[in-house]
Length: 318
Image 1 (cartoon, rainbow, N blue to C red):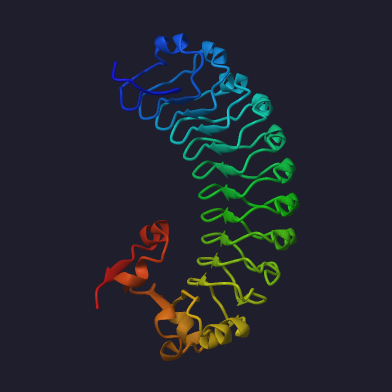
Image 2 (image 1 turned 120 degrees about the vertical axis):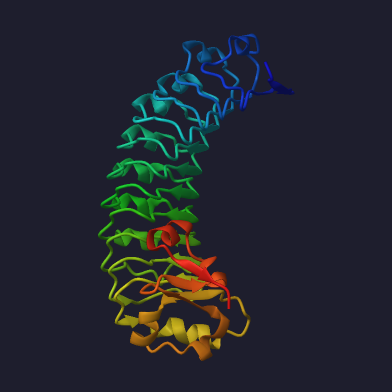
């Protein structure tokens, strides 16, 4: 078998495995185990004997049940991307040392309240699942710095999300959110906020988020955007029926002399409706023509791939 051994690390990537190799049981002191990119369906009960395991990669397999992983008390990193997991067990509360949990692109429909007991978590990635809501206990994850909920079915967020005061990255794109909680303004450490492709008609006040650098609110139903922080360097507002935008933002862009502002991304209709002057904004203005499904190839690089595909935008070299 083509395993690779590095000190206390075992790697069995791309081995065509359908189950955990029995030989792993002979190395109870391993701390890192990589079984990604196989065809594993089941996690064996004997995994509980690997008491020293700290890092476990099981990406790109066919796993459906992860209950047995909850008997690994020293686990700090758990990656389960691209499997067939439909449930996170309540027993996950036993992973008290877990710092990074990745379960992107699975079949999750809910998050258990017990997840809130993993207070050491700093990265939680649950993108591309079928989540409709989050438990209030999400607010107990006070050490969380990165939360990715991209491409789910979320209709609302609990107010307790405002307790995540260490959060720097919040990805909420491609959901069904109709509102954002007012407690969002408590996320003072936030640098990236992505809420594109939702059903938002209004935004909470964001002016207090003085560390916010990137804001993408494109593809919503916003008629007005106000109270934006002057810390912003990247702003995307395309595909919103905007009648007004924070005048302080455009003034800030026009007068910013240190070249730290990167771009304001709009669509051609907004340019006309909001009286945006391309000559004044210069290279900081990025424009997409949604009616004709095109944008300059350079501007297109600043748009999420999922939106390019949704709108079938073609990049043009000029």
